Length: 254
Image (tube, rainbow, N blue to C red):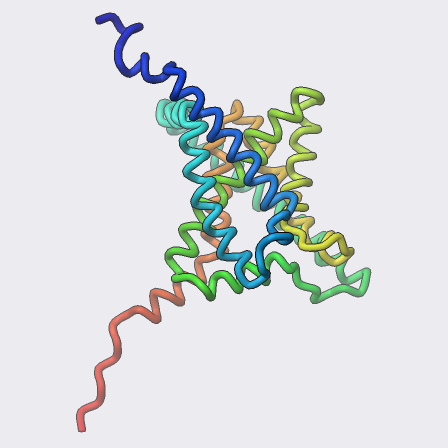
C-alpha cells in the first residue's frame, strides 16, 4: 500500500469526515458569535444562569474548535516544536509587548474615567466573572475561564475574524477591528463607563492580533499569551483555594 492510499490519508479526505469538519467549524462560529459577541443569550437565558451557560458553552466550543480546526492547530503546534528557541523568543516579545500595551490601556481608561467623573465604575463583565467564580469549584472555574476560554476567544477573534476581514481589507485593519470587537464583547451595555472600561481589553486584543499576524498566523502564540495573562489574574483565587484546602490545624488537647 502506498503512502497516498494509506488508511490514515484516506480517512483525512473521507467525505463524511470533511462534512463533519465543516459542520463543527460552522457551529463554532455561529454559537460563539450569537452567544458571546451578539449576546443573544440574554433574550433566552435567565440572568442567574447566564454565567453557568457561558462556562458550559466554552467547553462545547473548545471541543468543536479542536475538532473543526484540528489540522491547522496540529500544523501550528509542529511549527513551534520544530523551532522551540525561536518560538520562546517570539512569545517572550509578545508577552512583554502585550503587557506594556495593556498597562497603557488601563492607565488611559482610568484617566478618562476620572476626567468624566466616572471613577470607580466597575465593568459589569468583571462583576459577572466574580459571581461565576463563587458558583464553581476553583479548579474547574480556572480551567474553563483561564484555559478553555482564551483558546476559544483567540480561535474566533484572531484566526476566524482576522482572516475573514482580510478578504476585504488589509491586515492592520483586520487586527484593529478584531481587537475592538474583542473589547466590545466584554461590554454589557453601550454606556460611557462600559466603553471606557474596555479600553484595556481592546488594546490587549489588538496586541494578540499583532502577535498572530507577526508570527505567521500561528494561533498558539496568542492562545498561550492569553492563557498566561488570564491565569495570572486568577492566581489569587487559586492561592486562596490552596490555603483553604490545606491540612486542618490539630485540635487542642483538653
